[in-house]
Image 1 (cartoon, rainbow, N blue to C red):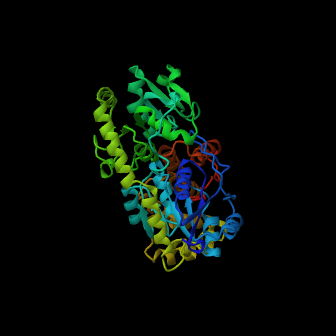
Image 2 (image 1 turned 180 degrees about the vertical axis):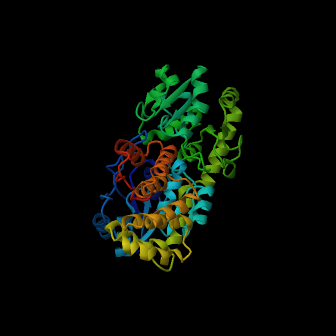
Image 3 (image 1 turned 90 degrees about the vertical axis):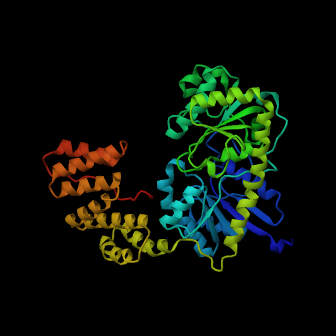
Length: 481
């Protein structure tokens, strides 16, 4: 293929192992040219990534536009969570096609949907998120589960330091995600406490590292440290059994490490996540466990039955190569975006609502009051509807129409109990001299989110200044900001 026909892809992200995988994939594809951004932001999980790549600061519109001008991409692919407005503005001004991959879901899906709704082309990473996005109003959604790069994720001869019966690697985040804590207790605790040969790789301390888990700390020799990502195939190849933990357990996402381990020909026992049956067959491609007892039974059986273990590992590798190869999944999505007749970056509602949000941020609350009703009549997605009503309620408050502010917040709270809405209702109620109702709303806000500082501050400030009229802290920013 001639250089003129090469497809140029600028990948904007905070670098971690997925970006290393993508670079490995593109390095073997002649029609594609890839540039990655931001190599300074190393992977914060458990292994460093060292790749020679082009980069630029991803924070400002000027930096993004300059990188686009230098690289002249056919498309920009954005993954992870850099600021939305500079990205959209730079792509619009340069008429650059944009594809956004929302790959970090799990416990944060309710936040990430607000991000996804800003863009026109979005990749979800499981069936549940795909349907959730579609129903929420994201305009053009693709579905791509976590994948592998068979040329890199492969069976290799493992050095002695990586040979073990059982391995589990990654940041356990034991004190951070309930889903990960449950996975670690289901898979790791039984094999550790029953004396199996286990190697644990990842962070030692911080947010629930391996040596902060009591039953691991008692057996500290099981902790092996961290490894370079280039050694991932060796880590997977050196163990008879790979235990898989993930935070993406709520909605059917199985975690990126699973596809890689399958591609390396590993026998896997994974913590069961809802929806795994849509992708895999238990005891055919891998095994999964829902309890410590089930884990022990699986480990004891498959350590004794080499042929059965190796059969499942071979079938899992075949499945990963056929169905989870990033080149087979991602490139058709990129090609589809490139074939769209118009360059479209942001969503329709984002373009309509952005001037109104700008007015809100600038303190022009009369413009917000006048403009929201017009937009609300256009049949917007429910989550955007909620966002605009939140801005409207706050704008009523700032122009002194407290009864209308309370009415809008009360209407929102009929749908769900959200801490920001409860806090602001409490602030409005205090302003209307109904201290009893205000206190109830603020306390409910702290019940919904115990660490919510605005509500905690308001409760204490009101207590110290009672019975005087107090000026409390209104939460101005919506959950996405």
